[in-house]
Image 1 (spheres, one colour):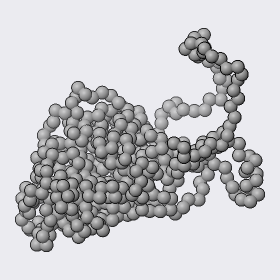
Image 2 (cartoon, one colour):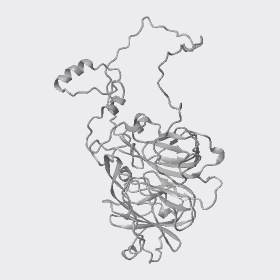
Image 3 (cartoon, helix red, strand yellow):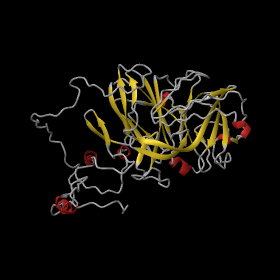
Image 4 (spheres, one colour):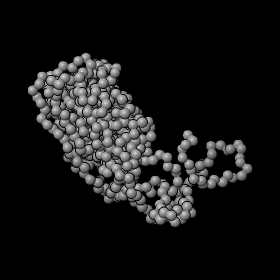
Length: 470
């Protein structure tokens, strides 16, 4: 639920020091009241009601933080605090975030705006905020101990600077960073151009989200903060499929998607059915001579990519990370591969002791989605999602771009499943299969082998072990 309590308008502007500074009790009375949000839904774009106009973004499973104008300065209030975030229906995580959610709300400003951000710390330890990618005074950069004192629990600091260049940026702590980012503390910052920009096209729909990851044991709710790479929950804006909302657009829309990566590994983000151009990074818009059509862009740790495309193909198009382990939920990584192993004899023996024993994985991992086994509390299936033709067998970093000719401008609601025209769905072939045409040059080695073995080697199947040897 969004709390949009009226902003206190009576006080004069606070003057920020050269570095981020603590706010006195007297000045606290002048703070804009914090706006809180607990629902995990994608909120409508926040159309500006003050300041310079712009085309607002839609944060996937997120929202934009309201502001107040105070003598020409845009004032925001962030509250760092413990939060409960629904990662997907049936699973909640105990995280740290801002203003009731992880990630925190998106901050939207216009190039040239003077911005003042109050940060109140309700965490059990000190914190700070780094404005990732911004040009600003050194004392506002947010590295605790280097650029500013840390923000102690219960204290409020103020950051103030001018948004000097347009683009997509991020914010996150730079104090006990390993813990606080592993607990979900991060957010997006969008600076819109103040006028028409030669490298930034106007678009009809503008989406944004962050890539993040957690290591939460089945049945648990709090991330393990010491994990370096072996995460088991891969998220977009602290949501995983089937909890990630769809991106719903009108056919013919010019669409922009901004993606920031604050996980511990890279992500090749892939869009079906369309080609896009990478038009921006956290360093700003890319030159037009450096752009080329793509369907996948790899986003490294700490990077942002902005892609633009024309949504000119109707349908429900998959949109996901192309690392297949990142499109699965709650996955154990030490399970041996059982494909091809004959379990029949051992199953007969085990069934005498455990009548309900089931074999898993000998045909592939799809068995896991079909069995609908009981799960620990606060856990979602590893492969899930029900589409119009059956199980989607996905999880993690997966969503759908829905393109419809009858989607109204400004309408972001889900139009439902695509109704395919007759004759445009793959179907089972029941007739005779023709013999494929073959050529004499097909197959074979590039040149004869010099040493030929004396006898043929017979390959036998054995039960594989884990990965402990490497």
